Image (cartoon, rainbow, N blue to C red; front, side, top):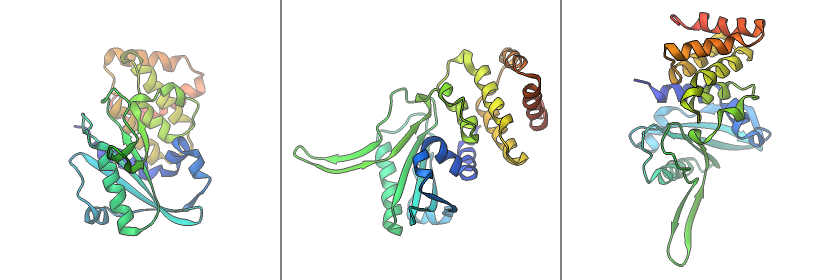
Length: 239
């Protein structure tokens, strides 16, 4: 069984700035990168009790010279609950209440469901007025095309393309593209190994798909082909 929480938490904590560069590039221009730290899980547990299969990562950083938080929230349930937006608001408000600092909320949907695009706000209203409207950034991976990220030399892109919208017959090509991008990244071996394991976990190939995958590798230049094969041979015990 895939431990989604550990994989995602490790991805976002190891590549938080790269995550922002990929999805929120304008935010990075105001972020003091050397101020980034992560709130301990014990403190998060004291603030709130998470719903089953719901997880969060809280990052503290200076944003425009002001202490701030980034709340990254995701839910691993196959079926997203009807009150998902309310859950995001719940964790946002608990964090804001506890620390009184600005919070940048980000919600991520990582599964193949739901098919429909989900709202990026929580609203409380009566017939005559809107009492509350809470907005948050939403990344719904099954509504993103992996093709739009091919030119991004970004470790988070190389990993999350494996969770984006693709036709079944595209799986071998997408995995090749993920590893092709990974081979070009200047990263420590341990980080490359983690990204390889992330990609391989979410895009396992059957024997027929492996043949198509190998055919994709054969199409590229020899030096690039060697780099991709090095990743496979170094990080995969059996292929």
